[in-house]
Length: 404
Image (cartoon, rainbow, N blue to C red; front, side):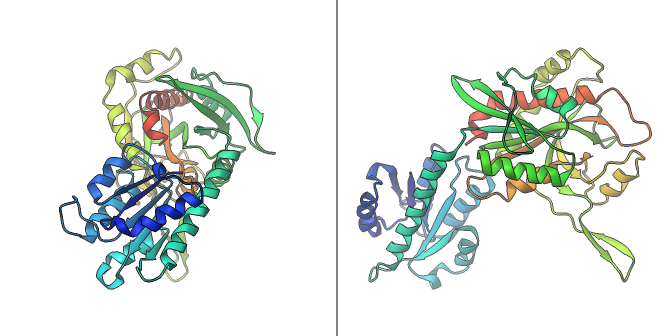
């Protein structure tokens, strides 16, 4: 178990360090820095199980205290600007009045806030109780984890899962995970490190089945990354057939309520963005035209032009119609809409709402038609293939960062 303490009053923690040794956490497992800039240097280079963060800290050791420095650090951790994950964060303040508005932000973003006092040990006991909880949880997870690093979820066995299973990841025959889910185990080796991969097909299509399955996978396997590949309908004029769409954000385009007074349905979409670090690496990958052309060249069946990777809003619904009208209606919810499908929001909702260890999540789907009467048949296999191949490229290049 590793702990990071960020506080410009390090003497506060002398007794805390001593008590940690009594519960088998040695001094080498605890880092203590006095500024936000020093904390950032550590957080980008290693992972911690617990962060203890004073509300009033300087940006540099020689600067004066300012709550904004701690708020900025918290924000970067929450939004993925700092690649290392910190599952539990304790705030610390010696003066709630001096903390001002930052206190409310800390109470919203942190596990809890400790009230430091030099005259009582209440804060110390609370801190040690939190450490004991995290330690027990970490030991339990190490004992029960299956060791799966990445899970890929597909809605259809053919052509979606079948294209994932063509990736050169040493797949094994499927094994039952529970009464309804069978998982294919594979291995991805990058730069001498082996990552365990699992691939799953949903028992049925749709957001509900996706959310239930994803939740089971996250709880049972505790993956560091959960991804979805497959096919979708694109928005004509925004994307081309065969393009691979990266969902950012995703939402349920049928969410809302019926207004009895006006006789109208009022849409209330809840948008879930992709994690910042995923977005950054997808942007890097989409500029590699040679790699995308190689994907196109490697497919021998019916195919459109060379694919692009297109990030943007992707909407999910319980059904995708083929009359073209559904896309017109959904575009009213987000003018930048690039596609619609039936599952991604369920995956994003399950991952976004998961407790520790919360996985990184992403969805890539290839455009096989435009959900209108001019549907171009024959591109489903290529769309499933191209989305699986883009996931392969993304992981082969950035798996170490995406699984942190």
